Every structure is written in structure tokens, then in C-alpha cells.
Length: 248
Image (cartoon, rainbow, N blue to C red):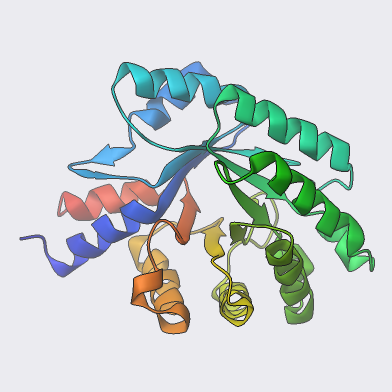
């Protein structure tokens, strides 16, 4: 029987989008990432890589007979207002084999009072994704700063088809916070929708991850917190999971 800490580590692992979004990523980096998707009998929820590495990940999983969803990012990390660019990137990523798209909302436009551009961008990307590809919308909560802005971004994303709302790109000063997560989870509950939630950026330990899991369970219920609704975007978190499972 695993200890309580080990049980928590396995639970956390099941929600992880194992991520590598570095400018110096190469074939070896991505294959090394793919080799880490399973610990014992538990696999991560997905991996997340740049669009140019989707095919590499897909080839690795096919070779090793693994069935792990592949996520990628579009309109990343700046959250451009160029809807055509975001749509084209999304189309190409899906054509390359991506199962999930993490698109950055034009959050600066929203801060400048423009709600229509973010809404249209999400809507266009959702139309491309359809029902087969999961669309996660990154609202960049750390840059939105205020609760009102986080609520507005979350509501726009959900209303225009987001399957998940995600806190952060991991590329700004302030990424996932429990405060932003509480606000976003509250918007999901109020919406009555089937939208999921992804915390990303700076979550490095199982203890930190459990704080987000417990918060989601408190707001939306234990039955809601499954990989179909709840994800944690992380790169270094896996080290703590492995350490706990090794009982070091």
C-alpha cells in the first residue's frame, strides 16, 4: 500500500501536463520528456510542447506503444490580437497531430477595453478545434492582476467555447496563484458549464499541487476533479513526484 504522501503524488501525476516550452528544445529534449510520462502504472494527463515538436512526440509514442495526449501552444506567449495568425497556428498544430491546443487570450486587448477581439479569437480557435480537439485558453492571470479582469477574461473564454481556462503561460513574472485559481474556479462554477481548469507556472512540489487540487474540490466537488476537468502544467514537479514515490 502506498503511503498517504505517495498516494497524493500519484494523484498529482495523473493531472500533470508535462511541459517543455524552451527555445532551445531539440529532438533529444522532447524524446527525454516523452520517456518520463509514466511512473509505475500511472501516466501523466498529457505532454505539452511547441508545435514544431508535436510530430516528434507522436512518433515517440507510436514507437513505444503509448497513448498520451499531446498538447501544444498557439498565439504564444504574447497573446497577439492577430486572429488570423492564431487560427492558422491552431490549424497547423492540429494537422501535425496535436490533441489539445493551449491558446493565449489577447489579454492586453482586454485590459485596454477590447472584449470583442479576445472573444472572436477564442471562437475562431474553437471552431477549428471542434469537438475532437481540446481547447485550453490561457488568460495570463498574473498580467491581468485584478479580480475583475480575471473574471472578465474567464467569462469571455468560457462563453466562446473554451474547454479549459488556464492561468498562465509560465513566461511572465507572476504565473499560477491560489488567488487567481479561486477566482477562475468560481467563474466556472457560476457559468454552469463543463469547462475545466488548468494551473500552470511555478508549481514545483506535490504539496503545492495539492493546494490547487483541494481548492478545486472545495469549489466544484471531488467528483469534478479528474483529468477531464483539472490539469497542472508543470516541468519540474515531476522530480518531487518521483522523489516521494521513491520514498527518498
